[in-house]
Length: 157
Image (cartoon, rainbow, N blue to C red):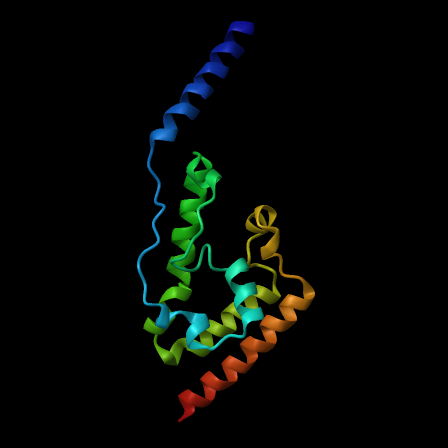
């Protein structure tokens, strides 16, 4: 029994060491700052801070890569979250989206925040500054409502 546990320990240990050599993506593609969501929508500083802290690591080309994002298997999970996040919505590429889709995208963002689906709880656990307090939610949702109204008015013209 003792040999079996020892064998299992060393097997897991060797696997954990070996997977450190499996590369993961840690790239931030170049992007035009003028196409950024916060720039295009002239977000107030307070809104910029909230959105950058809560959203930009997974939903932009400005992901911060902390030390643990280089340690497998955590690195695999983080790389997958970032790839999926950018694939669903990339704030750095906002200017490339179809303006006719802005309203629908903004409404989806609002819904995700209201339902506390975003930011992910696992992200908030490691990034306390990303927590969406009631006050922050109200600020963001009110700001999103303004942009949705502007976007809808623009698309009607």
